[in-house]
Image (tube, rainbow, N blue to C red):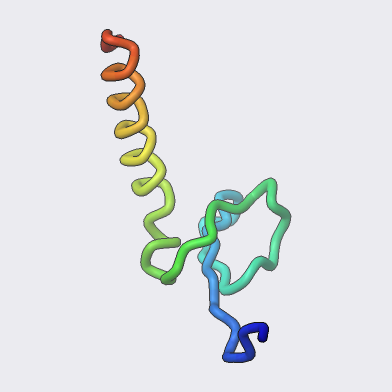
Length: 67
């Protein structure tokens, strides 16, 4: 039986406007997310920076060198 509870709210950060949106309201070209909370969406650039740095570290560990 499919889930019939309330829909989960997702938040997006609009990189063009700098605003957090509840649900997808804008073009995918402008959005980062989805995020579970408004606070996380507001920190989208910082979260992306940390994830990118972690991936760079993983790539360096896998490849045996760090650029």
